[in-house]
Image 1 (spheres, one colour):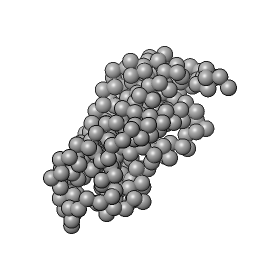
Image 2 (cartoon, rainbow, N blue to C red):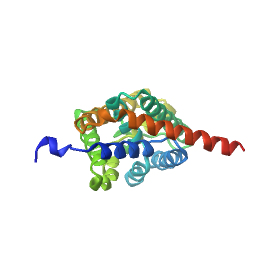
Image 3 (cartoon, rainbow, N blue to C red):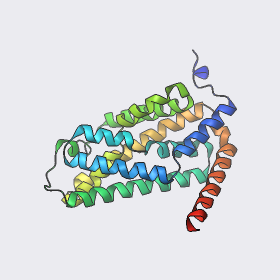
Length: 232
């Protein structure tokens, strides 16, 4: 099998895949609900030093989609998608930090455990994992038969726990912990975006700018209509 055939995707399929990614990363009620629930699982899991609970929260966390859509925005040179993805990611980061901070203040003890410290350690291995995970997630998007692997990919790369540890570190007065945890998230973010840009470029998504813009405009109109209905 040649490299060209491995990443070969026709125009109609590229449009469908791009639209699906945009839908999955839309900052709507479903996204925010999953985000809040995942935070409410991950933060207590970290404080309780319970790896099973932390993994459960990582499965629920919807952060992978907006990060991949950021990579899609770069490939298609669509600044509207880039702005939306950036706002969504920044909001998720700030909410997770705030939740980690508040919940840590009310925790019974301020002791660092293995689950917390492991989310603040840095090594080249984390970057390798992030790049591989981003490539796997991007490839799963263009190959529908592999979509079931997304859950495993979300667990393999640490996205939400390090952000929560930033809040925990701030609550504990441990600035070094907070900075290192934020650095780990940044490394994971860069690794995923980097590999997604490569996979999406090889698959020809740079030619889907018009389809992406059309989908985003349609979503914005639907969101405006929903807001009007809620006001009424």
